Image (cartoon, rainbow, N blue to C red; front, side):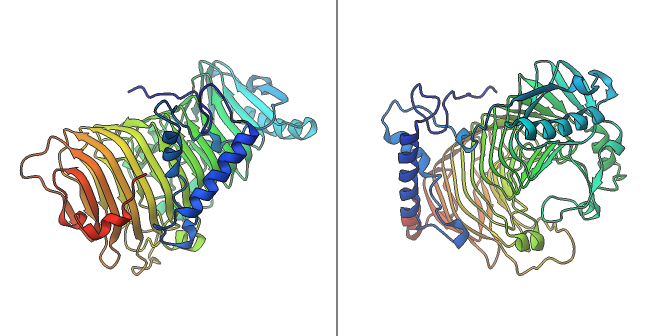
Length: 490
């Protein structure tokens, strides 16, 4: 399915590509005042300012019936012009689909670091038309990786070109992580002002050999991501196709101000753990106008794993997922968790289309996770042939080691779901909270699930909230008039 590609800048209107400085200052002031006023749903101190993202829709609609679509792309701030422009071919690269270009990419980035410092403004590395095989390589700050039309970067089929580094047990899945992990194909740590873009170029992880090792249980360490950025700020990823990742495809962890826009992410529908986009312990993230086909979640918001995520306490917050479409036969269109131990708050999911999938919107938690999920706004969702359109699940029994605390239970409060239509569904929504930690403030309005048999019923346990205009009739736990006052849909 094609998705709309808005032409407007962050919160801009009409023909302006970017708001003027006085207007931007006024807008920021309005947002600050609104975020201070809306605090009634907060569940913990780390959620200070909660509700600001939910007000974005109010601001756009307040301008009148002819208001233009908004975009969250303003999370990325355009840096200075790249004064150094190079080609990977200048460093011995050969785009014949066979020759290894690992050394060429690494030399090019090292050269960019040096010249960028000497001349200022950073550097741009062009990848021309061709098929450029490479192992893992790092990016640098103030840097643009640009794939020209017809350019394809291919992940090397030699595992030695994917180095193993020390594991980070605070995120991710699989016990093998604790024994080390293969570095991602493209990697960055501690970066600022990075752009990965092009003219519809492709980055292909050639992940089949990794999937086969996982299937055959011969994998000694975990697989690498296609793109992983850590501890980085002000990142733009746009106008490319990422495909066949060995593991998760795009993984920003401990990052801020990330824009992932106009991307196509593809993997075979049976490829294991090939999540599309996984913001992890990150803030100010915009995922917009992307098409994803995956063997796992299309988008999954995470923030750390059990006692490690609790200890590091780096939440994911201020995340907008808008205009995403795609399919996954085994997992969810948009998921939160299950690794959410650092906390997840202030998430907006809107204008999403999910088809032929196991689940539509899903919140996944477990005992041992701790953390919280708070102030989640989900609206304008369409689904086709999705087995379970809305699911809250528990009890995955998935832990990094034996050190997890069964008394560390998550807190879930303030989930606002509105304007959802699911056609040809198999089951009614399934909402399973956790004993001793019920999910509170689950608010639903205008939710319609079509195609169910006459005997189909919602299944709810350890949840409470309010509903209005929901069909079929929801479970009694979502019919409490006492919860109505806390269900404010902006």
